[in-house]
Each structure stands twice: as C-alpha cells, then as structure tokens.
Amino acid sequence: MSDVIVSSPEDALVETLNQMEIRHGEGFHLVKEVEPIEYEPLPDMVGYDFCLAPDARPKHYFTARLVTDAETGRIRYDVVSNYAQWLFKERAEGPYCKLLATDTAVIGYAARIFYARKDGILWREDQLNDYMGKGESNDPRVEVFAFFDEDVKRGDASRAITRLQAALWKLDGSMCLVAARRGADPRKEWIYMTPSSKQCRVSRGDVPTEKDVERVLKFHFGRDNEDLWDGTAIIGDPSDSSTLPEVTWK
Image 1 (spheres, rainbow, N blue to C red):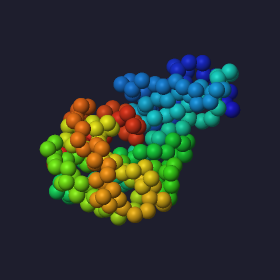
Image 2: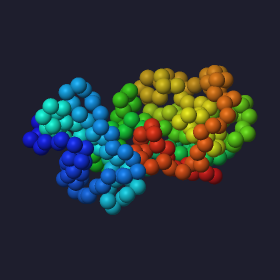
Image 3: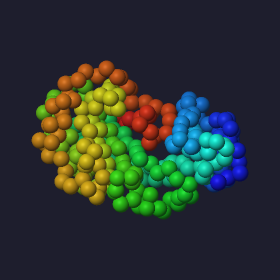
Image 4: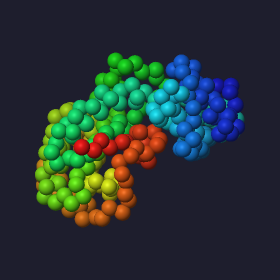
C-alpha cells in the first residue's frame, strides 16, 4: 500500500496524472467534457475514474482508475488504465471495417475495441495477439456498427445481416455486430445485435443463421428511431458504453 494520502477527487487526479506520466513518459490531462466518477468498489475502498488524454494526442481519450483505502486515504494499488487500446485499435478494428466497407447494403460503419483491458502494464505495439487474448469472456472484443438506409426492408436487412455475420465470423476474433438504421443511436435503437453467447471466439459455436437473425429482428425492427444520432463521435473513452465512435459514411 502506498504512503500517498488521497483525501479528495482533486488529490486523486494529481496522483493519477503523476503515475501516468512516470509510466508512459509523456504528459496527460483531464478531459473536462467527461465528469470524473467517485464510487465504492468495495465497502472499505474509494475509487476514482477519470477520462484522460495525452497532451500530444488530445483526442485519444481513455479511462484511468485510482483506488484508495476508505479509512486512511492511502492508495491501494497503482493506477490502472485502458490507454493501451490506442496501441492496437487500428490493427484490431481494421479488418472489420474493411469488410463492412465493401458490403453493398451497408451505408455507414464504425468499430471500437470494447472490454478494453484496464491494467498497469506497459504494453508494446508487437503484443496485439497477447492483448486481444484467446477470445475468452474477459478478453477484449471488437464491436462493429453497420448502418442501413432508413427505409430498408426487413427481409433485405435480414439477408444483409446474415451475410455480414457470416463474413465477420471468418475473421476469427471475438466480436459483436450491431446493426441500425441511419440516424438511429445504436446503443438504444439497434435492430440486431450479436447474442452475448456468441461474442466470445472460444465458445460461440456456429455463425447465426438467417432464422436466428429473423428472431431478433422480429422484436426490434418495427421500432421508430426516437434517439437520433448523426454519426459524430461522442467524446469520451471509445471503449465505454456511454460513447460512440465516428461513423464512416459511404
């Protein structure tokens, strides 16, 4: 346990920035558009989550976490973060984006690493396979977003999603396909999402059939888009469920 005493979110931020600078050899700053989070991971602990970015790359948002002892304010362990996702994002997401870019039914697409690792490891660029892991439940995955025309027919969407899901399966990585109409917020107004039981590579089994896809569309396709989104990236950690990546429109 560290001898540093943290008695406020301000103290926690100073210590977090200091540890990150020492670890990575560069300066970082708080992303002011995203509110810090103070919480209790366990009854005897206080946790602080900050959205940070490196000074040299201010749009490379990520989350850093500091946990302290609730009674003494002492740091329980070194800061952990998911900053390493930026070492691997382009290579991890690239094959998925390339596939969606060539599909004729898809008018827009995006991707992000989710379940990005939060740790204190100084990852190297040549450790992509180690970072992504074996495809187990706690390993990072790639979430891909496919957007269709607002007036797409249900049958056309079903065939396109089935085709996309089969093609994405061949990339042999843990992944989740989220399909939505243009203008919809895919966090809330999706029409299809890969079932959670089929997102982890080691346990997902066979690719969903068109019948499987239809079963999901039956409950989600008829909804109106109430939560609108123009495809602009939402500021914050790109692996966080509260954000969305920038959509590439064809």
